[in-house]
Amino acid sequence: MTSAASSPSPDLRPLPAGRNFGLLTAAAIITSLGTNGALIAAAFAVLESGGDAGEVGLVAAARTAPLVLFLLIGGAVADRLPRHRVMVAANTLNCVSQAVFAWLVLTGGAELWHMMLLTALCGTGQAFFGPASEGMLMSSVSGEQAARAFAFFRMSMHGAAIGGAALGGAMIAAMDPGWVLAVDAAAFAVAGALRAFLDVSHIPARAPGGGLLADLRDGWHEVVGRPWLWAVVLQFSVVVAVVGAAEAVYGPLVARDELGGARPWGFALAAFGVGTLGGALLMMRWKPRRLLLAGTLCVFPLALPSAGLAIPLPVAGLCAVMFVTGVSIEVFGVSWMTALHQEIPEEKLSRVAAYDWFGSVAMVPLATAAAGPVETLVGRGAALWGCAGLIVLVTAGVLFVPDVRNLTRRSTVAKVSVPEQARSSADTEGSVGGLG
Image 1: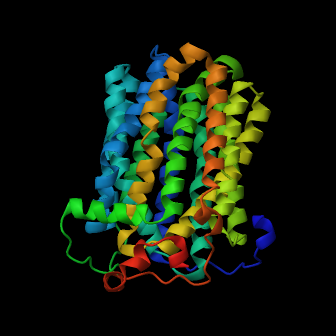
Image 2: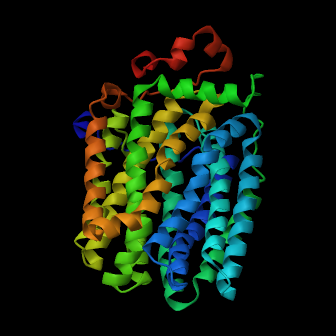
Image 3: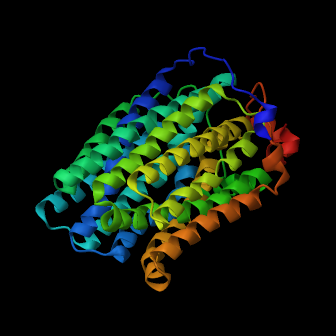
């Protein structure tokens, strides 16, 4: 349906180069290199300390639980304070927590509560960093080239994930996981230094508000007034939860029991990174007219990794599945960012991003913590097939929302200013039809 309405664009013009965009891209590459290896390292640090599936799930849940607690506050703070300062503070917290985690693992003193506490601190940093980063990125580009800029940014970030995941798996196979965590700490330090030089002078001064709660309420109204927005947020509250359980808990266990250890799982994650690179390249040229229809159709393949682990597929087959999934999620990701950039006023970007992130991570702690008990109750294979089925079910349900099927790309994007909002609140709180 979508391909009939659009075709690959031959637009190969250079991206609008900007200092902020360059700094954001460079910093994202650095942190992506470190973080993708560290996620593998954290899981295997638990396993090598004698932990089981339940303890791997608890540590994974400890990373995401603070996101649920602090994301909305982080979004409101990022729309009030200079966003680059929020990002640097969050990177500093992540650097310190990962450095301590690395030291404890390397010295053999890491206990379960240590790992849970330190990963929780990382999650807290991410709760403030994510909304500020997304708002900063969207405010750094404008015009018709925004979608290409988002695709290029994501291509750069995920390109780094290829090396990060493969290097992390190889390092864990050859040495202590603590060294991978130490690399992640250093990456946060360098990225934070780069982000300190971001320029926020182009962002209009915020109008005086009624306090943090008023800001949160304003962001909530922005979300619930747009059916396409809240529908996709609800969809991803389920999708991200089950994908997190499958890949953070079951994936390392399948790799250990069926595939030969950390290295094959690192290769599978690297294949996902290659797929995201290919998807971003595709989206630099392809401009689907129905943004969310194209994106939502590409969420269905996210069920494939869970199914592949349930079988389980050999390493080559699992890598192929992860590659397809990577391509698909980039089509969704770029389409989603373009829709937000097109429809959401600049001064509300971080708050809306916070509600978006909140929906995506709200169920992750429950899902990852429950992964071990569910495996014990029904078996690992049945649990993984259940993950795949849930993804298909909720994604099919979103397609019944008319605005998801009908939201279209505009040739130009006119951001709504604060005074214009006051004159016509219906323009900012109405449905997609009112904004088109």
